[in-house]
Structures are given as C-alpha cells and as structure tokens.
Length: 109
Image (tube, rainbow, N blue to C red; front, side, top):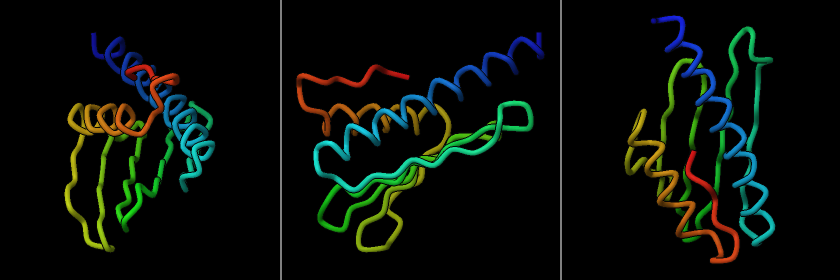
C-alpha cells in the first residue's frame, strides 16, 4: 500500500510541475513577471519553484518537490502567509483563476 501511495504522490508532483510551467508561460504572455525553475530527473527527486509578481509589491512562491508542497505569499518583502500541502494547491488554483483571462482557464492540478 505504501509503495502505491508514494507513486501516486510522485504523479501529483509531476502534474503540479507541468501546471506551474504552464502558468508561468501564461503569466509572462500577459506581461507579468513569472519564473518557473525545475530540478531533478524523477529518479533522485524532482521539484519546481514558481515565483510570480502579482503587482503592487505582491509576490508568491510555490515550491513543489518529493518532500512537500508549500506556498508563500509576500508583500513589500514581508511574508504574509505560508501554506503547505492541499492548502497550498488550493491557493494556487484560486490565484490562477483570478489571474487567467476567461478564455484560458488553468485546469486544477
């Protein structure tokens, strides 16, 4: 059972990484500053970091890896909120829906 759960988690991480990459591209097309860095080859761990500027000195960072998922939101360089796990994914979905034009919805990870 635990091996199956580990494989499912790795699959979720892979899906999130693909979603982060797509979101970063979409945000840049809209003129926003966004970067997504990935690392690892999937065998020795895999991860990604999305950093996006939401305007008005408001930034977010989402880290996804085999070790966990975290969302950190900043304003004026000060940390506002930090979420982990499912809460981080839900916040990513909320922000993605707000930032996306109505013609290009981002699918839920």
